[in-house]
Length: 315
Length: 264
Ligand SMILES: Cc1cc2nc3c(=O)[nH]c(=O)nc-3n(C[C@H](O)[C@H](O)[C@H](O)COP(=O)(O)OP(=O)(O)OC[C@H]3O[C@@H](n4cnc5c(N)ncnc54)[C@H](O)[C@@H]3O)c2cc1C
Ligand SMILES: Nc1ncnc2c1ncn2[C@@H]1O[C@H](COP(=O)(O)O)[C@@H](O)[C@H]1O
Image 1: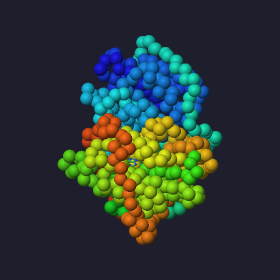
Image 2: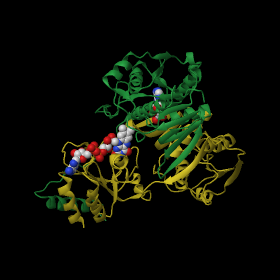
Image 3: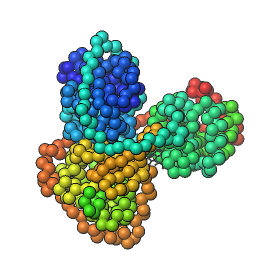
């Protein structure tokens, strides 16, 4: 297994850098080459950043940019055909997962998404991924190469390994086969918050009775220099908070130093989003709420009495 | 597009994530014996298909599941919501089929059984949550795909969909045939009535094998094997903070968090 090529791609350059670092750390031999794909429409500094992250090679695809997953998959396919990788790493964003499936379907390759750890073993590529809605971790062995593996952000990418020389190639794609046409892009309301990066988070769930009461949660967040997080119902159903606050399987994955869950029951689909928090505090009026099993500090009580006292104490 | 809109929906009979239990000693989850039920988003997929059909005279909704005999339950749920036809793709070794095999079988079935204009799937199955089957199917068939659809309108020769991404919502247009994946925000699946359940239990399921679909067994050989599924141990202190008053509670929590070094 010498001289393997690992290709890395994400539409988010920061995540692509992580993939390059991860691939450098996981690549089994000195002969292995980590190459990063840059598609049309990427930021101008993408190639330089990927080299700084440790890419031995850059595969720049040229042609007309399109956000269509079929077009993205076509661009990647051109590079896969030219470089014959053993592994294609893609950032496991929503677009990334879609492209992973699309490319794997088009080329009949094995695939995995939502991957948090990766090992290149002689008998296959082993990946850890969330299973059972985040309740569990599955180890999957991919028995055929090449494979397409979508890796989650923050999957423990170490520091960059330097490269001495960079092999830059260009792959012109005459006609991207865009199958869909985008007529409008609307940024989501809110949308500015990057809750993944927060050191402290105060998360509110359906224990909150009305939107106006968010004021006490915001006051607590302020006292703790924390961001406000929420469970799915508060974003997707009542819309009291925008999607960028939503934590869980279908929301954001966070890993703060302090996670304070208030009026949150602790459904498995929520827990998966906060399991990596360092210290967890839960406030719930139900002593049997499942969130308590995931908490370091448990306060059984009515949030309407507890939270104002917390605001006073932490102010 | 055919004169009558052909809508297919894929429904998975997957592990019930709320009932699956890990062995206490090993932490491993036994998937073979875990209770199963219809994957959540697949009910949204069926609901969306049925609503479209009801706006388009002559349209037909075909629900399809790949799996063992128990997958009939997912098809029953689909018919109870309103699907017109039910297809089960099965073989004695169904338990080996991975995501690739499922996508190949869905593609082969759609080809063999008359084709589709719209194929609606869940954007992730409740147990596996890979989000792979829909885009794989589209990649294999070389047709358009739109994932994460939150709003859908059908026009004469295609669809307009709102695609929900992390930071933005895109409006996207595609011509038939198109593969769509949906999540639970798109609609609220209707609760089947006594009568619709009764009708669903009587509905004949068309059972086909890979051979019937001209798919060779080798083409379904697993390429991804699940070796183990374990519940991660995250040790938590589980300290109960109590006090005579909320203020006392708050002061104790503050001391504890200060000791942890997590306060600003
Ligand atoms: C496929 C799928 C994906 C999902 N993805 C996500 C996801 O990403 N994120 C997510 O959060 N959920 C997700 N869900 C939903 C999840 O299953 C739960 O329904 C949701 O997390 C519950 O939110 P909650 O804890 O706010 O509400 P509830 O479960 O209703 O809990 C409210 C809690 O508040 C407590 N409470 C009530 N009043 C008070 C009070 N005055 N003081 C103190 N405590 C009080 C109650 O005891 C209860 O424990 C998903 C579900 C599915 C099927
Ligand atoms: N065995 C199956 N039979 C029918 N449809 C399936 C099956 N497995 C997955 N699907 C469909 O593919 C979607 C995504 O599944 P997954 O790729 O596992 O997240 C599901 O929501 C279903 O619509």
